[in-house]
Image (cartoon, rainbow, N blue to C red; front, side):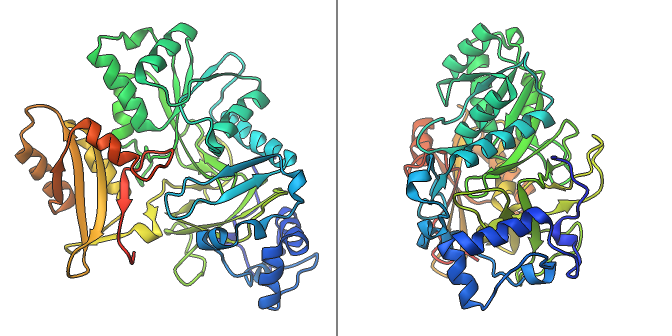
Amino acid sequence: MFDSKETVLTHANNEQQVPPLLQEAVLYAQQRSPFYKKLFEEHQLSFESGMFIAQFKQIPCIQKEDLQQHNFDFLCIPYEHIAEYTATTGTHGKAVSIALSNPDLERLALNEAHSFQLMELNSSDRVQLMLTLDRQFMAGMAYYAGLRKSGIASVRCGPALPLVQLETALQLQTTVWIAVPSFILKVIDYAQQHQFDLSKLAVRKVLCIGENIRDEQFAMNSLAKRITDALPVQVYSTYASTEMQTAFTECGSGCGGHYNEAMIYAEILDEEGNAVPEGSYGELVISTLGIEAMPLLRYRTGDVVRMHGEPCSCGRTSPRISPVLGRKNQMIKYKGTTLYPPLLHHVLHDFEGIIDYVVEISKDNLDQDEVAMYVCVKENLDTTSLKEFLKARLRFVPKLIFQTEQEIQTLLFKTGTRKAQRFIDVRKHVL
């Protein structure tokens, strides 16, 4: 069910028929969604069974702003049939509410059960959830539901303090952790500072959410290496969003997030909305499959990735997506250098003297991008070495603002979101 040989739309011929699950999604939205009914009418579109790819591509792509402005026009079921409300973080503007029906919740659990299959977890595992489980956060709920679906024990620690995480992991001998990787580093740092014997833990696998742990060639980046240097674990990357209610999760080969064709349809498009050549970077555009309450068609995620269509070394033939190069609207042009935030994160994680940080992008008085790094560094650090390191890795030295750990923590949650924001973009017009 989860490993199909059908071709990703990026490589599909316009004369091919739309796969059955995608066809069902289009016809369902045409019939039930006020937003898509209006959109189709405005563009004089009407769909019937047996449609072709060329017809599907006539559907205009939508983006986050459409969800923000017309949130519940996407709802396809009566309000009384909604089982749960979740919400996006609001990191990139107004938060969006995503409603789910009971079948949608079952689909969500099945989706994460698939992730745990890719990680080869079983009923002997004990999974410590080190992420938010409330505040309408879909991910925490999804992982918990997926564990129940898989018959695997869960330990709902949430984002508790490092001491609590360590004591729980030791007492219950949890074998798998699910967390933001930078938080794992905080747990490790706390253990090392307080002479906590990490060798007594049973953890062997870590599912890393929210941050890249691999580079473009799938090699572990410094963030992942710092985790695996301290703990004898295998790290897994996953990519997901509240809007698409689906995850692309790595298998043990660590060569990209497997594409679950039973739950999502993916396109990789250029700026003009055309499919990019195979293996090239472009924006990930998704259509959800099998969602009852708030399905999406041709939704621009804003994330720049590339698709890998060759069979994985694990034996699966499903295509895989690369680590996210960056968000399309967060591209930075600074002193002749073009880069995305993930590169800045990788570089800062590579410098061991940094305890914590926040990157802020603004415009100067000439309307040029300005990069500021708020950093908390270890005591007695030679700041000249940090400047030289940044110049060597980035080819420029950003504005450095040295702060205490508490001041950095305040910045991380300045917007009131439930997730730490290490990248703050205050530009009025993002390129």
